[in-house]
Amino acid sequence: MNSKSVQKQKGIALLAVLAVSVTLSILIGAATVVMQKQLSISEDARELAVGKAAVHAKTQELIYLLSTQRVTRAGVSKGSMENFSAKVDGVFTTLLTGDEIRADGHKYIEGTDELQITYSIQATNGLIPINSAEQFWLKKWLKGYGVDNFTAQKLADSLADFADEDNWTRPSGAETFSYNRNNYAPPTNFLMQTCSELYSVMHWNDAIKQYKLDLSECSVSRSGIININAINENLIKRLLSDSGLERAKVREANRWIINAQEASLTISSLTGVDDNRFTVTAKSQFIIEVSGLYSTQKVALTIGLGSITPITYALR
Image 1 (tube, helix red, strand yellow):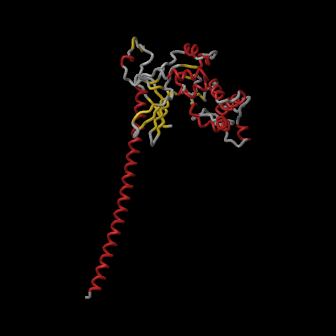
Image 2: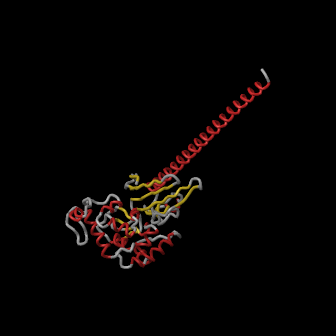
Image 3: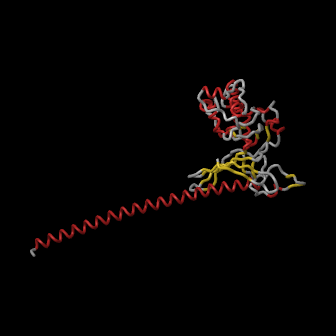
């Protein structure tokens, strides 16, 4: 075999080695990319699971506090201030415990940048009751959005007609004939189950869009009494104007209305309003909302009565 053939064979062998090396490098590189993607997916899945677990754990903690701890004018106690939970003859010796989680929808933030949780508790009686036969607060709420008196009355009458059992139309309302004529689904003749049902009520769909009504400010309560201490910051400004703004400010200093008489004396917007229309204490229904980076949990909670307090809750 001459030297040229040997050189040629060596060259071919070298090319083969190079080709194999390049192929292996490509395969190793591809495998590395796939592994990195898998690791990234695993890490994302872990963060998602941890985040959801944190949201669920906080929700359960708030449910536990509401079902076992004292509810005051400011909110629900964390149970950390034993000296403020003492009773004499079955009556608490203090009106506040000083460690309350507010029940007016105030948002709290806790955790780290990597695992941050936002949560709030809203007493339902701090929202606008749309199932109440007494429509005082409903109309006041609408006017707070700039709705004129005539339109506010029309919306109130239409809502009442939608929910009542008869087919008699109120002066500004709408019953089955009006719904059929305008190609609407007929009224349910039953109380609202969710605030989103307002979209189905004659005249309300347009009003919600035109005035940008925030339906999270309403509840399906049948009571016409609203809790002054549990009205959230945006809603209290809308309902009580400048008085509401001032009330929102003093809450930050943990100052709360003690009774209806104090409310009438210190909140000018309530001058002339029958004190039977409002209260200063939460009742038995609350909305809990907890949010994390990847999930949100919203729960409607009802606290029962009795020595062993039963609870019922539903995801919203």
